[in-house]
Length: 131
Image (cartoon, rainbow, N blue to C red; front, side, top):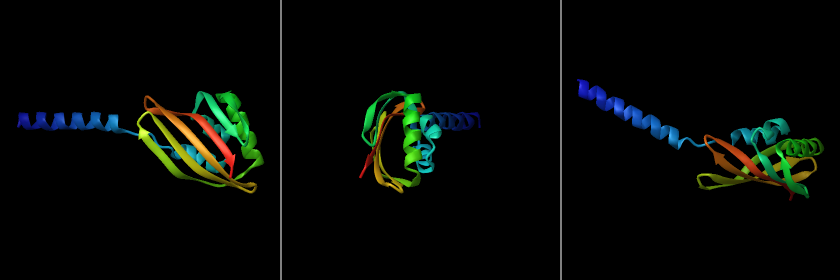
């Protein structure tokens, strides 16, 4: 009976470790933040420095500066919906997503690049390009 308990304990231990290693982040909170036009929520996922292109205004910004630029964009272009149309997650530490952001002023293609950092992910590049 003791060997059986030891066997199941080892299986449980290895399964738990494998689950931790295999856990992937989800982009869902970013989708929700863009869909609701919440620059504050979106900025939670910004890297400390981010490459930003918002309707032609481009450059490298600090997290706080980028939030201000995005807040202004959302104010001028209120969300009428957002959806991811393409994702590339071939490299476990870097992923790219393309989405469509709908507003009263038209549709914008959104390009999001994220890097995996420990169990979190950070957006290091974000673009809103009118389509």
